[in-house]
Image 1: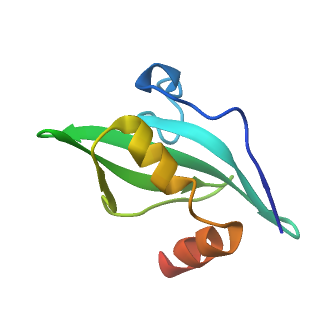
Image 2: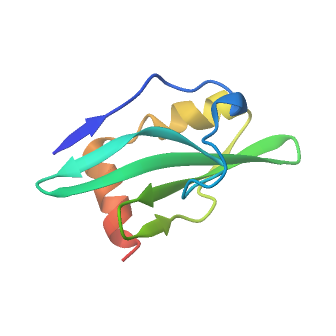
Length: 98
């Protein structure tokens, strides 16, 4: 199992371009096991004085998204919270989405 991570994004200015499977999400890395590979995105949005976030998993033929599972004080806090997930926990989260 492997997670490759590009440089961590620190602001919404590094969001992926329109037309991508997660247009409002930042690509944070790839989750790979055997022949299976998923791109992992974190999408954030303002929610009052806080920032909520959800995770998108994108493969060649599928797109799975969590609900808005993060609620943090800032965009960077949401990213830090996401970074607390291990690859095993990300796989479990993905598998729970069926």
